[in-house]
Length: 494
Image (cartoon, rainbow, N blue to C red; front, side):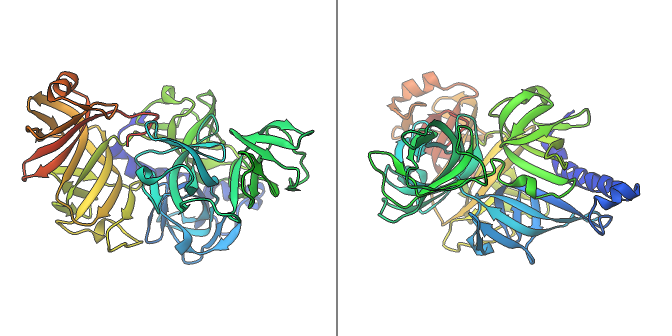
């Protein structure tokens, strides 16, 4: 069954509570099932979430808001605090949820990054760069700390957290520039699958990174170093002709220890890309095995939409065999729409915000971030005021504009509107009902980011073309200083 966005919020709560009720009934069914369930499971059940942090004021991940009063935090295997966590980081959260109210409380929050080291090459046209042999993909929802994407250069040292994709790629959800260049003694680490193992020369590859392990301490948990083994390789020595001179190799759980989140059947949610696909009832999301049945609900697609490298969010029940039975699968749509302007109206109860006369709907998955001088960590819609400057990234679902990201900025004058073209009447185009008009001074670009003439632009643009218009807003229309044709590439709509 396929449904639209308007039903998602109610459905999410209903599915969680239905799953919890089923688990509670199972706990009371007979003596054998009772011994497999936790004490007081009728009132409280376990819940686990693997996904991106989208907001604080508690911790929100995958649309589930967790209280954190009793939560412990681990970062890369070391004790940490809640203040160390950042919006955009991929975390695994273990907790409990009230079967009646749906209120969740975290007991442990774990963060493990994917790679930390110097950038060896960049391809800004494809929104990618390479760190220690891992290809990192950037999109419109990637959160940056210390530098924006356009500021990053080869040699910068970065920490990356993200979602795994096929071909050893990482879809970055959080990137922090830790240094402008590598300095001796900095710790470098990368996680991935061993390939091209050469025991005679004590070398192997992770992605495209050659690693020398001749001086490395091995902590493999009894396993042998072999092709296909998922490990963390690290060192604090400089590269030698592009070779990483390892001092430690540790075996890691490729599913990020998610099977340790539940000791018995529990409610589980995960967001990521389909990394392996055999059939509609046998596939993996970020290495997590998933199955479906006739009761699985699909949002923004159908079972036929399932395929390798498709981004989804899955809600369901994780059993003791580490198999996730999907109650609901939401296909994540690219956030091609971009708006930056002053807030005109806010409706807290409905989660709506209006700018440029356009109403955008926030929901349980919207990423909130404050990049203004206020720099509020626990930033949300109720912290906004009319006339403040915000930027949103969004997608259209039926007749609604759904904000996937909302960022507060310091005041500005120019506005930005990027959206599919609805109509063309040279020198104007209409985007989301807003007219943007060019003039003799307007700069035009094609989709390859090359400056073109007005004639070339209006010959190329057509209904449905993605255009980014920048200019001044008079309350009804935009006087455009720039009109750029744009295309989404590599699932990125920067």
